[in-house]
Amino acid sequence: MAERYDIVIVGAGPAGLAAAEAALARNARVAWLDAQATAGGQVWRKDVQHGWPQRAERVISKVLSHANLTWMPQTQVIAAEQNELLLQNERQALRIAYGALILATGARELLLPFPGWTLPGVTGAGGLQALAKQGWPLAGRRVVIAGSGPLLLAAAATAKRHGAQVLGIYEQADQTAVHAFARKLWRWPGKAIQAAMLRAQLAGIPYYYGSIVTRALGEHTLEYIEVDGPHGMQRIACDQLAIGYGLVPNVELAHMLGCAMTQEGAHPSVQVDASQRTSVANVYAAGELCGIGGRDCAWVEGRVAGITATGGTVGAALLQQQRHARKFATALGAHFKLDPYIHDLAQPDTLICRCEDVPLQALKDYDDARSAKLATRCGMGACQGRVCGTALAELGLFPRSGQRPPLFPARLATLGEFASSSDTEGSFS
Amino acid sequence: MKQVRIDIDGQTLDVPAGISVAAAMARLRPSVRRSVSGQMRAPFCGMGICFECRVRIDGVAQQRACMTPVRDGMQVVTDG
Image 1 (tube, rainbow over the protein chains, first blue to last red):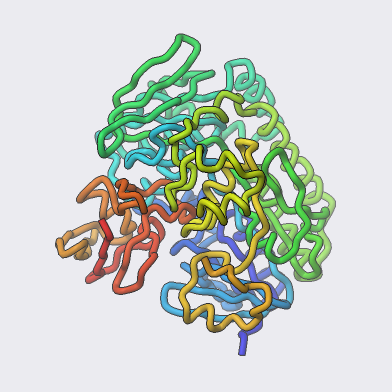
Image 2 (tube, rainbow over the protein chains, first blue to last red; image 1 turned 90 degrees about the horizontal axis):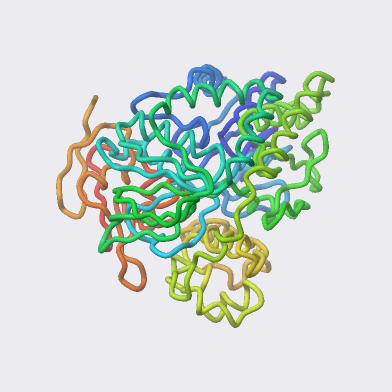
C-alpha cells in the first residue's frame, strides 16, 4: 500500500525548499525527496567545511524539523503511475501517493564534447564546485575554469575557497556581451549583490573573454589544455579543468508524466501557467526545469507552487516578483549565447557517449537519437543519454528522444514493484 | 574534524566524516573506473547525472561515489 501525502515535492534546491515551506505553512502533509544526501540542491549545496549559506540553513532547518514533513534523502523517482510514484533509495524501493506533485528537479550543466573531455581532471564547472563542497581535495591544485555564464564566477570562488590556485576564468562570450549583461544586473538587486560579492572574492584571478578551450591533453590524467582566444592559441599547464556551458533543465520526470514542454533553443523546459501548474492535473513545476532563471526565480516560483498546490491564492506582490524574476532568464540566454565554434570542437574520434564510448564518426549516418542508439549504443549506458543526448541536441545533430521508465538505473527488486508492464517493455537498459 | 575509516579496493583510508566517496577516492588516485574501451575515468558532473564515478559500495553495484557520503566501515570496490 502506498503511503499518501497531500503534497510530494521532488527536488530539494531553492524551488523545492520554498514549496515545502509554503505547503507546510498551509498545514499540508508533505513528502520531500532528493537524490542527494542533504537538502540545498546544487546552488545551496552543503559544504562539508563551510556548511550551508546562512539564508538557506535557516529555512532548511525549519522545514526539516517540521512535524508534517517526511524527508527522503538519497531517493530517486524511478517510475510514475496515476497519482503515485515508485521511488528507490540506497536500500529499498517504495511507493508513495500524492494529492498534488511539485516538480523542482532543477537543472544540470551543459557539458559539451571536445578532444580530451573524458580525461580524469576534467569536470563540469558547477561539477567541480559540487565535488569541492563535498571534500574533493583542491588545495594547491592548478585549476582552470572555462565555458560560459555567471556560474563560472561561483565555481572559481568555491575552488579558491578550497585552496585551489585558480589560473583563470575563460569565458566564451565576448566582452561586449558580458558587459551588456552586467549593465542590466541592477534590475535584479539580489543578482547585483551576488555579483559584487563574487568580484571581491575573485580578486587577483584573471577573467578572459572570447576564449574557448579546444583541447585537453595528458597521458593518463589532465596535464594541459589549449585555449583559443583573441590573442591566438595558447597552451596552459593545469591539474584540473572545470568547464561548463551553462545549464539545461532536468525535464525527464516531467516528460515521463506527460507535461507539455516549451522548446528553448535545443533544450526543452516545462510549460507552466502563473500558478506553476503544468499541463497535467495535480502536477506543478517550479524553478530551473521551467527555464533557467537562477536561484531567486526558483525560490519565488517554489513559493507560488507551494501555495497553489495546497489550494491557496497567490497575492499580487508575489505574482509581480515571479514575473520579474523570470525576465532574468531571458537576459541570461541572450548574452551568453554560445559561439558556433564550440559546436565544432569534437573531432571524428572524440567520444560523444561516455558510457558506451561511442565516437562522433559512428553517429554520422543516423538522423535521430533512437536509430543511433539502436545501432551504436549511444545513450544506452548508465546516464541514459543525460550527457550525450543533451550534447547532441545542442550540437544540432539530433533532438532527444522521449523518456521512458525507469528514469534512473534501477535494481531488479525495484522494477518488481513496478506493475504497469505495457509502457516499460524493452526499456530496462 | 571527526574521521571515519573506509576500505577502497582493500586499502584502508581515514578520511573526514561527511565527505563523499568520490572525494575520499581522490585522496588515493586520480581515476575511479575503466570505461567499456578501457580508458581511465573520474568523476565528471559532480552531481549524479553522468555516472562516471560509479562504484560498488557495501555490495551494492552502480552507486555514484559523488552522491554517497562516507560511513565508518564502508567497503568500496572499483572495477579499475
